[in-house]
Structures are given as C-alpha cells and as structure tokens.
Image (cartoon, rainbow, N blue to C red; front, top):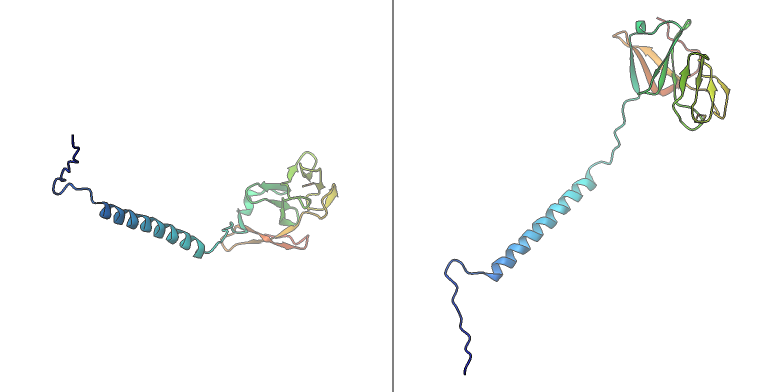
Length: 163
Ligand code: FES
C-alpha cells in the first residue's frame, strides 16, 4: 500500500503568501518603532518647564475692605489688612514650616494650626517656633483702582498704601 501525498493547488488570488506577510509585518514593526522614537524625541526636546501661577494677586477694590479688617485669601496665601494707617498685605504662610495660618478675630491674632506660632496683625511673632515674623508683601493700587499684591517681593514693615 503506497501513501502518496496529494498536493492541492491553491486557488488563484487566494493564496497565502508568506513572504508578503513577513514584509508587511516588518514594515508595521518599523512604523511602530518610528512612531515611538518620534514621540520620545519630541518629549525629550520640548522644554521641561513648570508653569506656576503669577505671584501678582489682584485683591479687588479697596472699598470692599472695611477699616480694621483682616481678610485671608486662601487661594493666594495672603492677608489683606485695612488698618487705620492704610492697606498692607502679609504672607499667610507660616515662617516655621510653611503651614497656612488663620486669623482669629476673637483674639485679634494670626495663629498657625500646625505648631502653635502666633503673630500680631502686623506680622510680628508673639510666640511659637516660627523663626521670623510674617513678611510684608509689596502692595500698590493699579491704574484701574484695584489693590495689587506681589507675593514674590517682601518689603520692610510699616509701608502702608494710603488711598
Ligand atoms: S508651621 Fe507654623 S508653627 Fe510650625
């Protein structure tokens, strides 16, 4: 009994072409590698910049602050204070380890919730581990009549903005 292999010819137009398959697979792999290289190259060459918000804060119209008021702007971390002598701004960030302080109107002080530092309304330290007073920040009135504060510039105390 002889066993002969029977070769069945592929139908024309429907044949499985190994060479064409591997060529397509190779081009596909190269395309994916090129796209990955381009993406990493773009990321490598683009500047690695951390965009921070502007240090300048528009605190609004002076009329909106009553005399002898202390207003905490939580978002910008500043106090806007309308004293009898004029306006000034303090950093609300504790000089100990950077916690956000809070105005305690019943005590008339600024207190840090983290380690208990206390400050007067003009930023001077009363007690606690904070090594320095709360800094005064540069404050001015814009051409539009708004109070402006630059959180990046500290000034000597007692420089009031008089309107
Ligand atoms: S962070 Fe304010 S007392 Fe420590």
